[in-house]
Length: 181
Image (cartoon, rainbow, N blue to C red):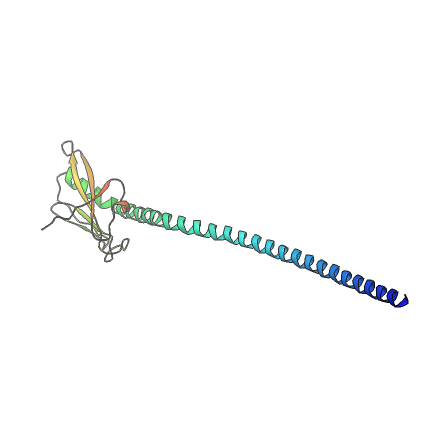
């Protein structure tokens, strides 16, 4: 009987040892699972933050694509308005010469402004050879128009050139249409 008892003790010892190893293995597996889930969760959180940042960058780029041409047109329009205002003194002299029936006496003009002595039209070069406001060629024409029996002069503003776009011009200025020949 002793032999049978020794075998039983050995078997029970082996069984407990196996159960203990199995518990340790299960505990180790649970720890690995927790660690993996924790890492996966933090990776997901990081990727969500990255996706949010990426979304913000994409929105910013789209807004810049939409806003940049509008801002550029506004800046060019304000520069053209300033150039037209630079011709105020010339316009006053021309208006006086028309109202008082005098011959127009040209004053010293900036090199980007010219006056036709017969029609008294002012031409402002805003293209690459003039004020360099637009790319290509660009001209603003200011034509005097007499109103109420020569008591008042109104200035008609027109523009032409390859660098001119309608949205670059002040509200009272229109683009001249090119005639087809």
